Image 1 (cartoon, rainbow, N blue to C red):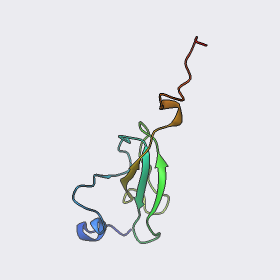
Image 2 (image 1 turned 180 degrees about the horizontal axis):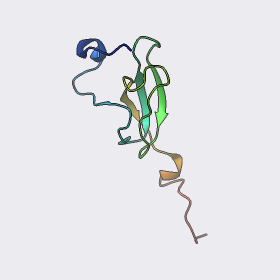
Image 3 (image 1 turned 90 degrees about the vertical axis):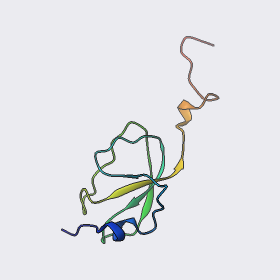
Length: 87
């Protein structure tokens, strides 16, 4: 299986970006850049806080994730929270 070299994998990643790998707990909900080995171009997906970053079916645990934009679930927004026992 192909493994990333440090410079190959980090291409396009600034030092300020935190890189996550499969099995890590997702620290905050948002849109993440998903970076595979050679089989697929980078793409994005929404991943939610508290989940675990998944392995890729093709490149396994070599896939990496970088937060692009934070997002909040609508149910967590103060204007849209469902209150229990209220009005």
